[in-house]
Image 1 (cartoon, helix red, strand yellow):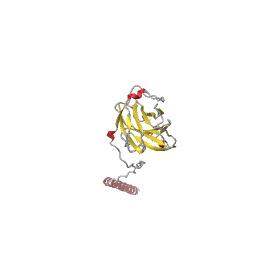
Image 2 (tube, one colour):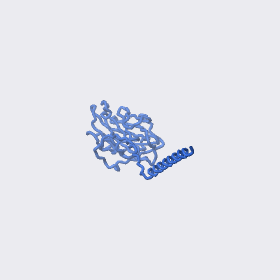
Image 3 (tube, helix red, strand yellow):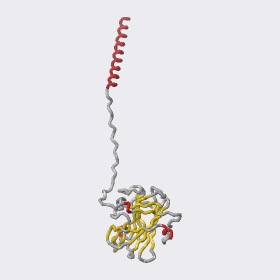
Image 4 (cartoon, one colour):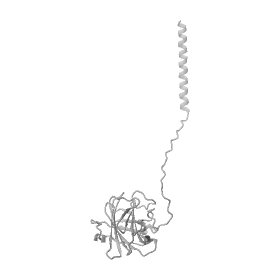
Length: 252
């Protein structure tokens, strides 16, 4: 009986030794193999949807540069000309961007921490706001490019605002209604009008070392159609699509 028991013990001992040997071989093989790197799952990059690239040229931007004025007094948009505007120099709109005519206009710019103020004086003795589209009426367009980078496409801080000769305000691309004000009144001669606009700054604040991109356009309509349009900076008149042609104003 003792002999049988010893034989069984030897069998179990041999089996245990074999299992240990197999385990050690497996560990050695695992250490010698080069680990296989897992390929990470690719992360999809959002595709930016943009408008077609405009195909037109622009005037040298250094030609168009204006200093905007700031004072403790600011226009209050009361519907009449205020003497505070005399503090800001007038700048003429001279570039024809559409049609033919003799439209004459100038503008003044003032600023404070949260707003840009613009006064546009238009000489036009033939009022016409009969068209359905504000683009085909007597109207004023104001363009703002807050980072002054003349962006190819409208982004945050880029916007344009519109007011027609009847004093109706419109919000263009990127515009904010919060703080936007406008009014229109005669110039006292019967031959023209003032368009006065208060525009909110959306991503920056006004300060003395600030520059922003800026432009003004005046549309002159006749018989329900656009007859003539002039603009300050963008001589191609494509500022509704791109801000590459705007001018620069420095806060003084």
